[in-house]
Image (cartoon, rainbow, N blue to C red; front, side):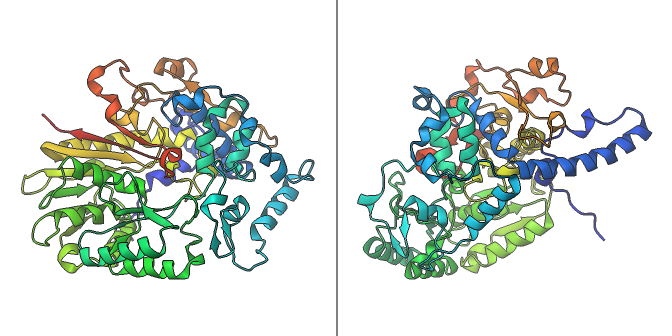
Length: 515
């Protein structure tokens, strides 16, 4: 039986609140084995406490609240920021159950579970968050004129509760407000079926313009997002059966691709600088689930005769899922046959046997994924700065390998669905608008699990701060090597913040090989 492949992200999330093994293991070999067993047991215990206590939400707020301007908040957010609780307005008190205080944890948990499982009187089953915010009324979308200009934060969301409890982070108001709401529905029209795309575009503009429309900042007018007034998401699309049927059918026949805006950016960016064109040879180093592979394929193999995308993934299971995604994409066989699937560790991906390097490389590396929390509810309960810190080394290795595989004058797009500078700026030594960040460390061994105290983060602005704090496994590359180095062109990277365009969080940087 083949050896089970390790998942670096899963490994990083396990034991999210404890120091790495190197800092707790004994020096002597026998003691190391004993300590390793104890470490594993402690890890499971800490994971359970971390998930159940809500520590992840509080650490997330504390970590990003400590970051300088430009990481997740703008200059305007810092101006006049005061008590975090004031930003919620009167709705916070109104939505809070009057008898919630004084209840035991078990009672609060049962109350929360009951609220989640409650069925709407009209039987529509509409998302409770959308229902309470007034976005949806049964099967009818709220009229634009009746939507409040600034929706109040949903007081029951765990992230909002963590935000309100931290009075030093009021500048995160817009950031948290966006993250605590569902991700809007998005898709893009594919270029390989112009007639079908034109027909679909016409139907949407004539019959469903109040629900979904092209993005104003997209010059091609092929990227669609649900309108702010409709609050239309993947989960409540069924409330408009005909629109759902239209989108599902178009997805199956290859007319459109269901893809988030952040996920579209790497290929759009590479195409905009002509790094990806008709006939290009592109490597997608960490390709699964395949949305970027397919997006690149539509450009490089438009006529089905030239161009190729090498879709790689280290995990055979994810590679199988990738193959299935390509097969059911609805794209013609003339295009899908231009995909080559490989199963290598991206950090040691072999060079092409032909000796001809790649025109462009998509380097969307494994990451903590905290930019995806609007759609993935499993990220925040286990969130810890440790995850990004541990993935940093692997991300750096993958990017370094990409720099060796791209041709001279070729371009790499490094990207993550994380907002953590340790996984972004610290890896490519570049960022848009910021050249300074802080690194955090968290040790739950110093926390009393029987109390509501989640402990505190050890925030380090420089590597020497970590050394003085006795943190032994802090790599020097977690911090900027030289923040004042103008050659790094930090401003040219892209940081997609959720509150700016109602999206998920995303980061990308284009790197051109010149020597």
